[in-house]
Amino acid sequence: MSTPHDPPPLIALDAIPDGGFAEVEAMVEGDAESVILHREGDQVRAWFNVCPHAGRRLDWAPGQFLKSKEGLLVCAVHGASFELRSGECVAGPCRGESLRAVEVVVRDGDVVLDVVLRSP
Image 1 (spheres, rainbow, N blue to C red):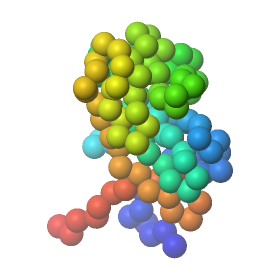
Image 2: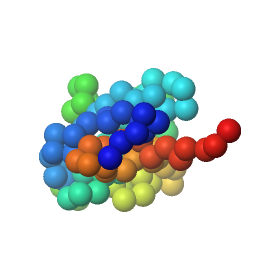
Image 3: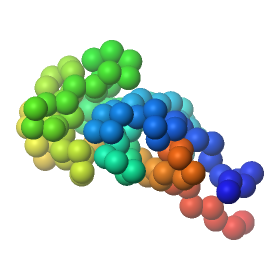
Image 4: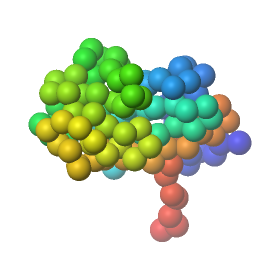
């Protein structure tokens, strides 16, 4: 059950194809950011939609991402390839660097930011 302090849902889990991607806008640390979500069953991983190579978005069109036959996320601009468990670049111009992770959880069928509430 959500409380007034819970972050709003980013997207319904079922709106992300299993093995696929979605792009959402989220307030992260006070800034509106484009975030990539990748679903594997009931698990979702998230990263800022920014390639560490040149600071450009990874999607080739809004919310449309390339996935290689090896199962890697591919930057549409320069072809950098990222492992989907860690976000590490395993091929291309930023090899060894990583996408910046965004902590998310699945709660009541929705993907939400994993915000740790601190008492004042």
